[in-house]
Length: 334
Image (cartoon, rainbow, N blue to C red):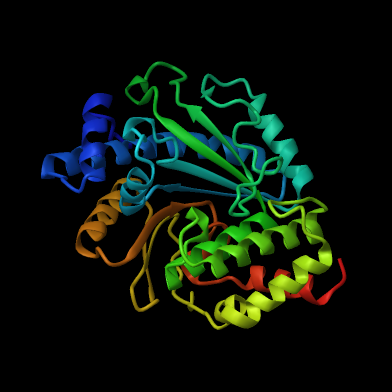
């Protein structure tokens, strides 16, 4: 049984987060943050079991992940007012749908479920379909507070988890943004990097939303002709699609274990570590984060290998879905 639970007060967790923000982490602070992060795995496992019941009769990919240590530090730095104990996406479950209709229907089912967990946001708070982010990000998020069903898991009460709902189109766009960010340093996801890359993904989001989902994104003021013309110009200039189409990472040795550690090294090679037990996976995960500080490391879990590959496609440098969609958009009339 998984037994890591929060051992420190939220005040102590916040002080450790402040130290990380200021670049003054002590070994005690690191221990506090690692315990806080690892504690969320219990909540992840609880939620993913519930979500899979909703997904079982539908064509939905469900995957889960703990937020990476460096990503936590980066978010604390970017958001000066963020308190670590209130960071709601340390634990995250992602659901990927074939279309918007099934996405909205499943979300409504989950929102209406009779469980004790408390949804902390209003329905429209993180609805990035109605109000896409300026970056072009689209999807819907909900934040839940964990509440023990039977009273036997009260130690985890109050921990937060973020549920992400995306269609395949929205997920393909988000995956491409992450890959390009890791390869070029132009992180359009966080509105960081050169203006050409940020603009490319704003326009790509708009084009894909119109073409595949009959919706609009953040650039709704542009005509179809203006949108395509500017995108074509940027592709000729910076070659985002050409870059993504050149990538490939072999998954011949893909593990069958349901707890997978994926480690993308600085030379763009990918290592796999598979475990059947969560405790063993977490121990190895924390060891690698300490010893391989230049690598991009994530611990993921899903019922199937293809589920992990689909939900975390960026760790396989597999942006083929995005490039295929974009080529269709650019070559065919809207």
